[in-house]
Length: 231
Image 1 (cartoon, rainbow, N blue to C red):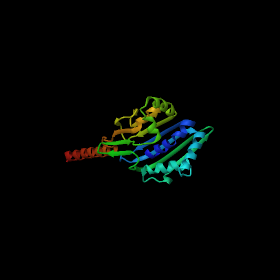
Image 2: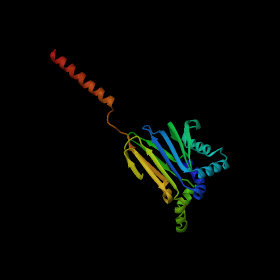
Image 3: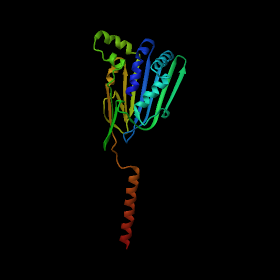
Image 4: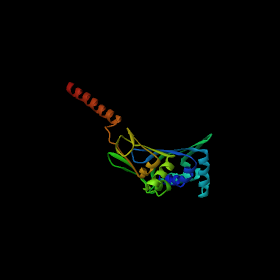
């Protein structure tokens, strides 16, 4: 995640002078603490897309697709380019870019993502130490530059969704719904992306198979007792 945000930050100046950018990311955490699915959807204009493609090539990548997949795979252990599905839908003046990876993988040390597990819970957290233009602009304390940055950043929107393996018991998310945590950032509150966390409960009552087995023992014991009584 951190490397993807850095790429987006490097392209910030392009976006600021030419249009808006909307990014949504969806992460599914499994009960064993691994990531089972991660998906990113970007919406922007065809003009911004063209500029981002040119900017990626100037950084040594073959295309914007190449830059995104390369940095996407660096964020997760056991994930390689063939594991990532990537699509671009061009519809008039708009472009929708979708990347997704499914399986069972872990975040890399440099991703900013950490997942911890104990007997009763799984905790997801993201910590940013980004020095990208996005974070620098959003965190500027000067009132004059703050007003300017608010206006410049108003065209950028980032929505982050994490699906936890159980009911969420603690989080700093903007919205929670059962096992889903949602963070929504736009404009100056992009600086609040420095720390995200959610904890979910994975303790549960005995499974259906256990209940059936126990029922069988009870029924079996009843018939044994009845037979002995007759004898």
